[in-house]
Figure 1 (cartoon, helix red, strand yellow):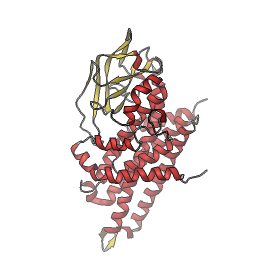
Figure 2 (tube, rainbow, N blue to C red):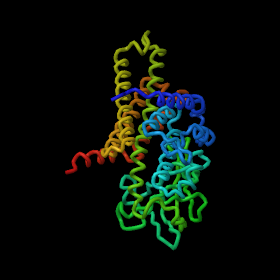
Figure 3 (tube, rainbow, N blue to C red):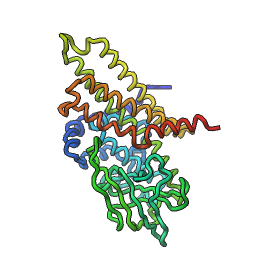
Figure 4 (tube, helix red, strand yellow):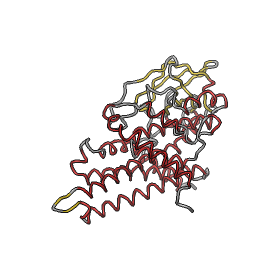
Amino acid sequence: MDFSLSEEQSAIRDLARGFAMDQMAPHAAEWDEGCIFPVDTLRHAAELGFAAIYCREDHGGSGLGRLDAAIIFEELSAACVSTSAYLSIHNMAAWMIDTFGTEAQRTRFLPKLVTMEHFASYCLTEPGSGSDAGALRTRAVRDGDHYVLDGTKAFISGGSTSDVYLVMVRTGDDGPRGVSCLIVEDGMPGLSFGKKERKLGWNSQPTAAVQFDGCRVPVANRLGEEGDGFRIAMRGLDGGRVNIASCSVGGARACLEAARSYMGERRQFGRRLADFQALQFRLADMATELEAARLMVYRGAAALDTDDPEKTAICAMAKRFATDVGFEVCNQALQLHGGYGYIRDYPIERFLRDVRVHQILEGTNEIMRMIVARRLLEP
């Protein structure tokens, strides 16, 4: 068991870190404040291969592994969690097309997703089905060589802005086996969007409801067979959970580093904060928890890379632990900054707002516990 990065992985980390510090960190506060979706920066990231990290190379993907992706998303998130998180969702959608799509679908959609000329969104959650994803109600009825869609998807990252939407719809009976996956393209008749949501964090990416009112989608845009949609969605989420956990680790690392620097500069009662043993212990615990979270993320990524039969439970463990730790480290860093941590002149509050939602999306952390418990208690 080797805990060191390979020479190639170290080079990938350095590339991602350099891009994050040069192209993302200087603008992250502005993107957050102005709710700016940084299209040009995302496309520059795509030029480095960060838009299709673990897609195959024949259509322009980088052909890397999930561990490589975890390294990249940690580095990017140390600059801007929100933008990195959107990029992780785009990667998940591109991988789903690359893995489950026909050759015609891969040829048609992947080249523009790889360059981020087109942006992608993942559409599973509905107003009435969040954690209970198998109960989704958006319906697709076959009409010749098209499906006719009716329903609404909620809280969609990239909603109203993306060009490609991977939508889980009901084509059969109630329950997971009645779900299929359709690729819906922007501009299709009957596709519309709700207002952009006003959010606590993740402000550099738009979030909106995606609405279908008699939306006609060609049968040729179905990913996999009818009834495969829930399985495809869950396979995507295994990787998505590791990605978002990596984003939490990156944001928390940035806050830990900021807290360490601040403790060396700030003086109270005639001493540096770094000289108070109670605060030293707090910083040590933050660093220890963060290192444990990173190792769990790497374990989840490795399980995906090796197709470990326990990969779903391992990824759920990593997501639950790393996103909880990520928020707590950011929160403790804010506390160590005192009042300065609460104002926008310092980046701590932005990181805290951005990582909070990671405990909710890609399956709430309560659902992660259910996944792990179910696996533990199987006969």
